[in-house]
Length: 365
Image 1 (tube, rainbow, N blue to C red):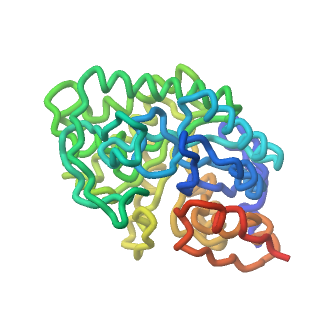
Image 2: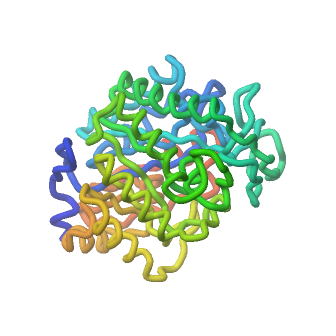
Image 3: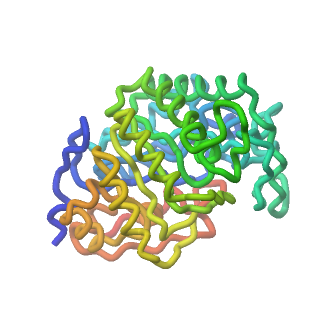
């Protein structure tokens, strides 16, 4: 029934066991030192039957932190813990990449290592609150510090160093988080980048940061092992670009010019963790990517096994990611193969501390 979805896939330099991807899923379970928790290898190992596992968004440096209990990869200990995760994923035959992010203006000092403060391309306060472990309710995002040239160069080098650590941990590749209103997206967007230097202005100038980060990442990994995740038409985290289609096309052209290994598209039927109705743009964004980018595509957001199979059979996507379903279905590949219904997850434990809702979802009997 799912001949294409379940069949082996050649994806760039990798031979995958299926066309199924576990995408990056923020779980907010990191330790106080921002290392993956001791059960993270078990969590990822439970899900290692996927063709490709993309590990959760991971900070490239201390000030890149936005939310509580999200992991980093800037220290030796963090890198060593990620190696345990990689080994657990590889044990099931899956390939794995780590998604690297810098949250930029989306953050709060209470969530960051001591001495850090959120910063972004411009001092534009996000128009939404954020949660911390120290407050009883959500609090305001502060006005971020506008990044100096020294800050910009530091962040760019942090991406290179994070990639070098990812390589030490054994990751097959890395994915640049250029979606959902975080730093790369902030530099690209008109409402968050008001700069008048070489990092701001017209679209091509606003995309210079993305180019510089990718160039730095390519000092550690070959281009074919680097992916980019985008959220075309997304407004999550108060991104309000004047011309979102031009921004999306520009980002795709950067990926084509630089020869990145794959593009990972969040279709605009999901915004953050909110499911939305289709407006037709979920089809349009894939068509646009195929027109402007010649490499392989991962399509994500709102797929069922049936719609994923159809997308693959039509050649519109090369792999399909199943996001929230992977939280509560560690054996998702088997469930698809045997026609076993997906188990429902509990949203109340998606982002909470502890192991409840993390490693305790059972496999189908």
